Length: 254
Image 1: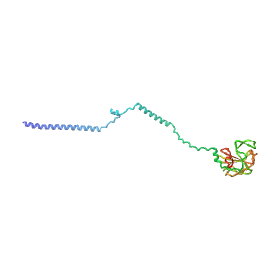
Image 2 (image 1 turned 120 degrees about the horizontal axis):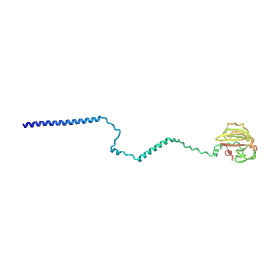
Image 3 (image 1 turned 90 degrees about the horizontal axis):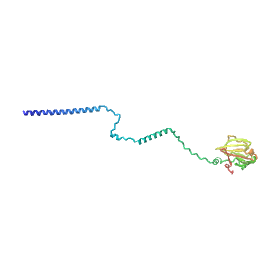
Image 4 (image 1 turned 180 degrees about the vertical axis):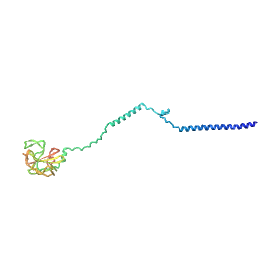
């Protein structure tokens, strides 16, 4: 009897242990399945984006608040930059000015005259009678008084050929009571020569080109202001509108 009970008890214990094991395995399987389902649901659900940032205490320590002095400096800098931009808009651009080119120094008047008329040809050969005089007065036999004399009188016989002192163009040919027949030649560069007390005005005409040494008339009988003098050529030179002493530019005359 006892043996039969021990055999039954041993057999029942086996089934009890087996049942407990099955329950444990089933419970574990159910728990695992549930966990997997929760994870899958979490992955499939859309994540809502937050519209604000939550800073942790650690994050807050990493952000430095600007000091009052720093804010003032930034504002000052911003204001200065803005003011500078406004000024640049308002101010007109300065025009680039070319540095004035250095003009060549003007030569002294006397040097200019020498360069222009130093090659004068003697209009007639002869001695100087009445000299050039503007600062110091010269005595006029005709007027019987001291007066200025804006040319030179070169003594020569009546009919002696009068020649152009330089190349040029005849500017005027005329006759008046003061100087008799007069011819003026324009040589360019501000230079003119004038011949008076001539014998004829038929050898050249206004606008005619003449060469240096070309006969333009002859020595005539003195008239007008110099009628009391012996025969001569009254000769003048004009430079830039001013009478100058012809002797400085005629060869062999001092």
